[in-house]
Image (cartoon, rainbow, N blue to C red; front, side, top):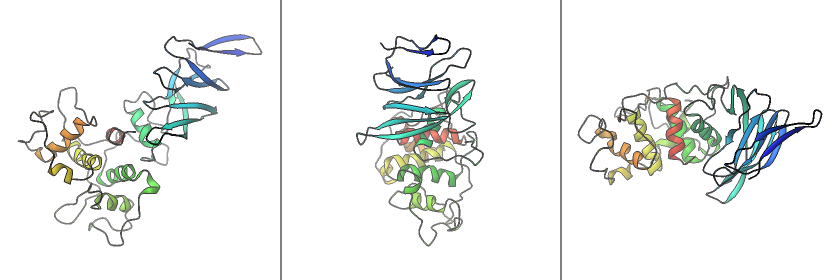
Length: 297
């Protein structure tokens, strides 16, 4: 195994950086007191970081996933590295911005540090151009997702980023989403029969500011993942419901196939009480989890 030490050439003091026996390391780069390197902890290269100025410096993952990340370089709060795009067998360049909040990690948003339960999912959707956050640098993970915001997430996910979402049609589909609505292009893209993700109400409205609960979110994400509602016309859920509160014979039967499908695909899970809680309004943190899992980020 290869370990990492830092030598101060002025004092000739050597400081252990990473000497654990679980991994080999290489590709070391240093900027001030910050050190980054390739870490082969799980058989593929990930990127780890340590800040030697801390009283008890501990290596932390910066880019660690089931894929491969390598060749890191660091300057100030910017980390660049090569990220392997497995679907195409090529490497691309990625960049993360670093903050130090007691525990260290890479944080795109000021209010989602690596101690937040959804941190890795929020970082994943940000890296794939699904979310951009707010002007103050925050993500606001506990904010409830509305139907217009949901369309933005899913349109960017389906299209492959914000720039890939096409301009909406000249004539609006929904009476309450005019062409100058901030989410018009995204809502129209999701409503397009080719996507078949977002449906309106019987009165011809979309109701863009309506909060989205976990039942409705399963429907939207299920359609986006499966290729439209037509998939569920032929989909047969398992004989026994995965969650006691979402069944074919109760008030949530309308989202039952979608919940079961997403459960089988590893996109959704329940709460510690064994329920799905379809009535709970979906937060931006939860939305990041749905989208990251559904699109394989």
